[in-house]
Image 1: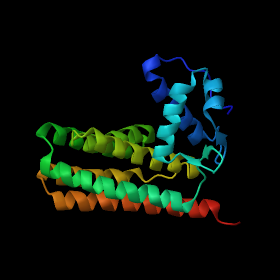
Image 2: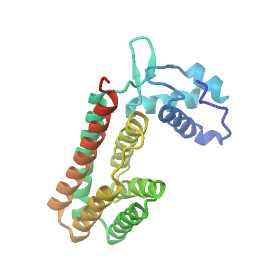
Image 3: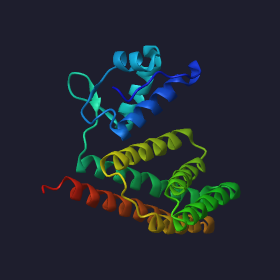
Length: 225
């Protein structure tokens, strides 16, 4: 638990801040895979009450970053199956969301999606990986936001969070920003043109390609030497 330090946040935001702090500690492996985690320990380390910690741990468990080991909770273990499941969840969700956006998104939402896609390509082309990752997240979030459905937005956010944390923790550094950005442009173009079939297909292919890239890197990293 050394990766967790006392927090300074407004009470109404504490659960969100605790969630972010634990998520960051999982990525950095300050909280190593398989580490037992409890309300009491997290609350003590972060100097907060158990209530926001309980809320944060429930969300982390719903996302898939924390799992039950039969006695309590632990940080999810690395596995090929976990990565595959996370990206296949994204594939189904993002394909459906992109199809919906192509059919129903407002002109304003279509413009925001297109702009985010362009920004991912520009940052990728400039080898600005930090910028690319920020715009990559914004691109996918804006497709979900186009539905104006909070439930769908939360499902998409949780799927994005799980896949992102597993990727950043278990295969850090793996990246193909140019190809991803090119696929973003294809998805955005299909949405802009109202081509729901193409939008769904491009989004599914994009998630599948990232899945395959991350799985290949994970297999190489965990292969016996």
